[in-house]
Length: 385
Image 1: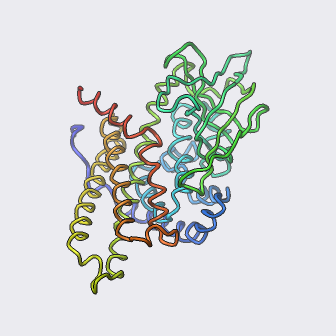
Image 2: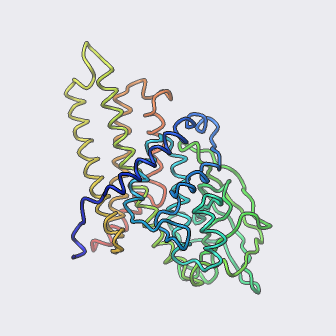
Image 3: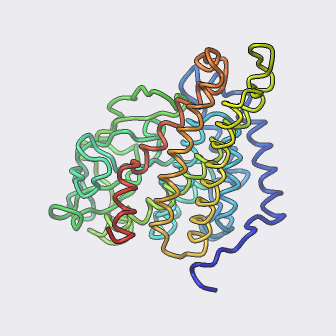
């Protein structure tokens, strides 16, 4: 089979059974609590343990590392069903655990890292965060200033990170730090337990949306960690980070398509129930045509994303396709939620309707994990510009 061929349909009966189990979890453990979580801007760590008990947190890790060893389409089904919770903050916190902070531990982590961090994370007993972004650098990973100097059998970490999802609750941080010279050649990845002396949560950050997730600024002051917590090879972290970004960006695209689809479904329900000038809003051609265009864009985003998922699942290099999916799907999600909020009129601006939260929450998708502008730069290089 050539790399250009796509294997579809991707979902089997096993995926369908799994999807139903995720939907039951969302209905039972998440939906009844969402309004409280949003108001309190927090949720219970116990949710990770419950998800871990059901095997949701280690889908693609092999059995000897605590996971289920299944294909990427289980991750797709998991992401699509999570969005039904209408709680993007919690969904993002879970995605950081499954697709952002831990994949590299399974791929490159030594036995100590697997036993001490990955397996407990897959079980939901430890919570992870990814520490890359700093106050002075975001997408410019080569600009990382946090340092990790070697001292005997330890690394001593100094610096700060910001915009860290799960930062205030994390038991460990998959951390990018400078171990060598300037630029991308001197960066390494370490696992840093948050119970080490010198670690602190400098502050929790207030956000436009995703209120139920914690986003924090972290500080490291002479934090000493054993050298066995080095992930892979020293000074090779930049390459590892770039590879790890692909999974993070792909789950963002999956979330985006599902969120856009959900907003469209909300629009159809509201548009049929709400009347103006003696007929349902959806009866006006202006809205029928607009929703038709939006539905077409969502479908295009879905299959562009599925194409990237197929390549990723088969281990084919797919930076271009994943970047395209992330760019297009996330921009479409923002567009769809904005237009659906407009269809709701004044009610769309009120928090009692879910579209107002969706509008706030999806806005992050074109920023986190690499902005739309960065995606365009990546794509332009991949197509020879």
